[in-house]
Image (tube, rainbow, N blue to C red):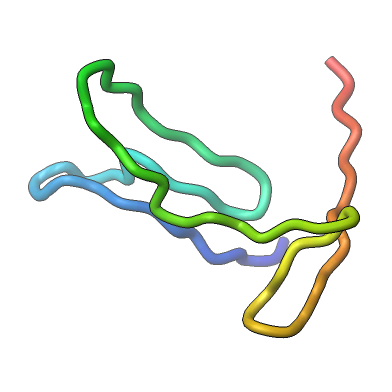
Amino acid sequence: MSCWPLVGANMPGIPALLVGRNKNVSWGVTYTFMDGTDSWIEKCSNGKYLRGTDQWVPFSERIEIW
């Protein structure tokens, strides 16, 4: 099993990430009256996304069966 980075945010005093993402999953909370802004915008083109400033990486596809 490999270890992947985890990115997220929490509130002081809460011992868990409230919003975040890793390689396989992302999660968040909903607050109806919040005036929020995207914290990042991913640049995508022709089935690829921009990593860093000059590397275009193709999206990987995952099929889930329930």
